[in-house]
Length: 447
Image 1: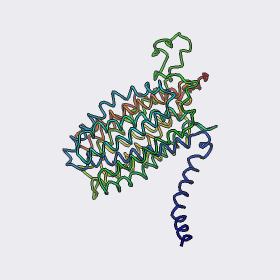
Image 2: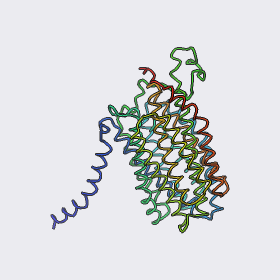
Image 3: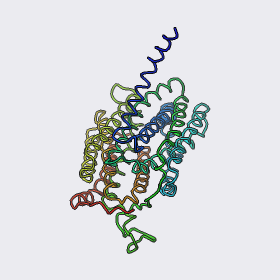
Image 4: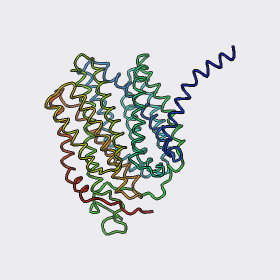
């Protein structure tokens, strides 16, 4: 009898341990385990799973539980209370974390623990209908974006030998996308049990992430050889002790190629925020043919996630080959798709636009990473990653705000989407092509 129990225990235990070993083998491959990058990949997967649990809970509470007109008001209130303060706080996050380079593991753990506790507060608000839902949601947003900024700053510290930043970031991003895809249906299942249950799941996940943050290697907290980056295109934008003519004048500039690439990426990130909020209301009022609002949003969400994953894979394969041209082509592809979707508005083209937008955003972001690695001195590279990520987060918030105030007219909305991308493309096209034509050689590394 005892032997039979042991056999059943092994049979049940084997799939779990086998899966865990397979995941660990994949995340720690090619030296990622020895450098600590594997731990960061796993941590980012935990982060993605926790965030999507909270998203499922908030979507069901703020969005699906009330009629469309009331939902627009509640989401507008949500944006006013959460996103508006975030636009003020976001520019401070990067510079603040620049001043705390020795506490990056603690900062990531703090962002995880804060979201764990806030998930419990939101769960209580969902059950009791309290207004603490909104400030708690703001806290979750700020903690999530702060984690993203720190994570961008940590990746360069954990590169294995002969490992590019593009490849490392693509692995981290892909792990987050896969974890989100796995956790989303689990969150939906927990929501079927009860409204607060996805938040309880998020609490458990983020507590695990708090402990996992401290498993990163100590070199994450080292600031040796680092300085602060200023997102300026040339030395004329410098101020203070490193202004033009001062000793080492170029250390705080990131170069024209990087700033133009950042502008193009900001346009795509703005489009992402716009599409999320605009399509959420549009598809609720006018779902895809023969489908419910929830299924319609799910189809578009899956298309966007698939496009993002494909862009990540393609970006990793292309590595750092002509990143300026890749960004120009990616934004042009998104612009053309948005224009066609606006001209021949329909369910299929909406899903195609979501997929292409996800693809272009992932590909352009990895190309921006390649430019930062190529053009920014190692001394300020970590800071440049952190500050550029903060700017992209602000662009996403701005796009979301535009999406929430748009009338529910599909053609008009996609025309606005195309205009957003066109402005970003036209203002950066000349600079990116000029940079690609003349070539930008890596700057001397400063110890």
